[in-house]
Image (cartoon, rainbow, N blue to C red):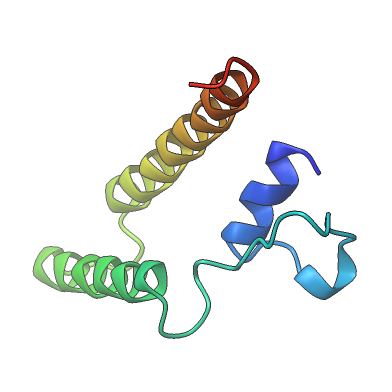
Amino acid sequence: MNKEIIYQIMNGYVNVSTESLSQEIMVQNEFADGKECDQLYNQVYKAKLRLENKLGECDNKDIELIISYMSSIAEILSMKMYDYGKVANQINL
């Protein structure tokens, strides 16, 4: 299983039942109802709505860009952490 599939499963982009997963690792959707990421995402969404309300407009492009870019940053960091972990495992750190 490659890091992109793991990331997609963790973010709920891929239905786990449709992916063949290694028996050695159990990957969970971290955005499933009630999980910590789901709760945090709901708080981000509520903050977004409050900001849009204050600004008097829906779908403010700057707010959308901030959320999108933060998601991209998180993905980049996740992929690098996976790579670092793989290297660390190979040299038994």
